[in-house]
Image (cartoon, rainbow, N blue to C red; front, side, top):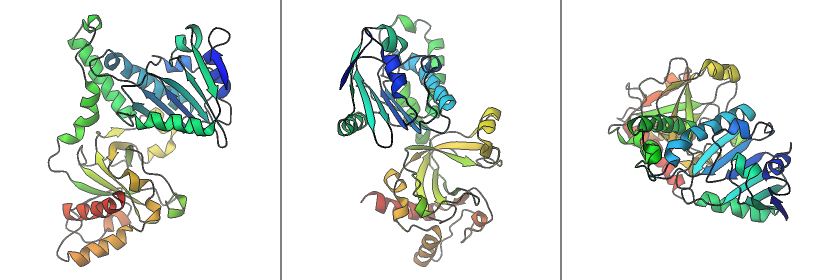
Length: 362
């Protein structure tokens, strides 16, 4: 254990030194964050980081909700620039007051528990003190306790973009908002939960994930447990899929069900720059965000035998007069010929979901 202070050194230099080439996971919890991550992190090396997580506040009826969306956007942009292949997450805990910075590698971990916020003044100029610890057990407890207190998990960049839109509109509608101690605003709750509430007659889809050149098999143990995930589609677009619809994903390769999603976003097309950074997006340029309704199953799907073909046969045995596709078919023909989705009947969709839920509820 060692004391860190801004009076004899500074948190910024300590932070930079801890971000060595072996660090794979960076976890940061701070109620106040910089408005410009590209500036604060300009000298930090994140190329080896595979996971970067930020926990912060976005309080109801607080200036937080007006000013912080642009800061969160800055965080996503910095992460995309510094560690483009990393898994990036933002969580909101509106009771957060502590500041914790965790640096994990394959065999070790270090953490700073401190008074310093994730800002330039917190890292360099304010009189701040903290402790550096390296107990893997204590660090794991710290991280778990922070995650257990989350109010809004997985605030994706899609949500942040919408928060920015609402924030900008709020400032236009309330030009004197800066003079108000507690502006009446709860845009996070509005954005986070609004999309899926409007669809009273959801459609059901079965969607393959993976491609023939890069199939998904059980032995790969790919994790599909994230709460919010982008579902990608070909140049034909997302079709009639909209917020509130249900998409059940299935693996190209082994044919197993992977997870079940309720669509929360709207279709978006990759920009020219995104296609340049990720050439595969030329083939799969459209995406739409979904909220995972089967996180437990999605994190261990390979342990079960929910093969779509076996489930199809089981369904037809139980309901011989039912169809499985909205077009009236009883096979997965369109998927077998490379389609990126097929609309299925409500009966078949609920049958598949029930089988997933049987596992998820155990």
